[in-house]
Length: 55
Image 1 (cartoon, rainbow, N blue to C red):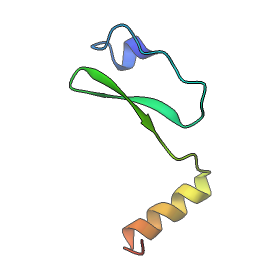
Image 2 (tube, rainbow, N blue to C red):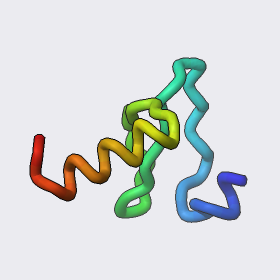
Image 3 (cartoon, helix red, strand yellow):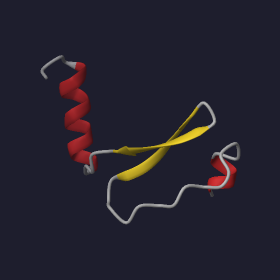
């Protein structure tokens, strides 16, 4: 999967056992990142709140 999505970064970085951790590819480098784990309903609420400027 990594070779199809980010073939410019080789070797692929090791995956993390921690939920919510992923790698973002930018300028031919992979950077670790942390993302919030949300249900579909939580993500929809967050998007509508952010779009309304309520944060």
